[in-house]
Structure formats: structure tokens, C-alpha cells
Image (tube, rainbow, N blue to C red):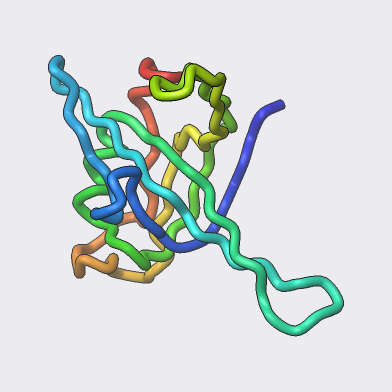
Length: 133
């Protein structure tokens, strides 16, 4: 079984500028790339260890995330792990990256998100899963 649930803060997009890198495909479908920062208490020690996970979501979930969340927004995601592989154009070496393909997002900042917009029921179910799932 391939399931992952993470709670943390929106950390950044793949473009390095925005919290969420939203693109619209030529056929009108949205894709959002972002990362989530998760803090974990160190076992037997003081302090926390921070982890960053690359994520992608599609369709209405991607559009809603881009409209509601910003860097630092507390979210919980549910998805599955996916490994992408490609050949580096500069070196010709094989590269890979593990991403979380997000199926559901919950907004944990209460009544509103970082952008000050209401979240409604605090979750965005992923129903348009034909892309990548």
C-alpha cells in the first residue's frame, strides 16, 4: 500500500520564487508544484529536525491550493509517493526525485488561510485524479 499523510507548512514552489508554482496546461488543466516543511521532534534530544518534501497536485485541488495558501500556511496533505526519473540534459546522468502526489489537502490555520480567505470545510478532496494517478 502506498499512502502518506504529512502535516506542515507550505515551504516553496519549484520555481524558487513563489510558495506554489501553478501552471495551466494547454488543455486547461492546473498543476501545482510546491514543497511542505515538516518539523519532527528529535528523539531523546532538545530541538526539532526539519524535513522538506516535494509535492504535486492537479485540477481543482491545484487551483484551490494556489488561491488559498501561501508560504507558511499550515496544511495537512494525503497522497501517495511517486518516483520521477529522467536523464540530465547537461550531464547525461540518470536523475530521480520522489514526490508526493497529493489527493487531499486540509487547511489547518482555522477559519482562514494565510491569504485571509475562508477555507470552508477545511479540506479539498481530489476528484479529478486522471492526471498522474
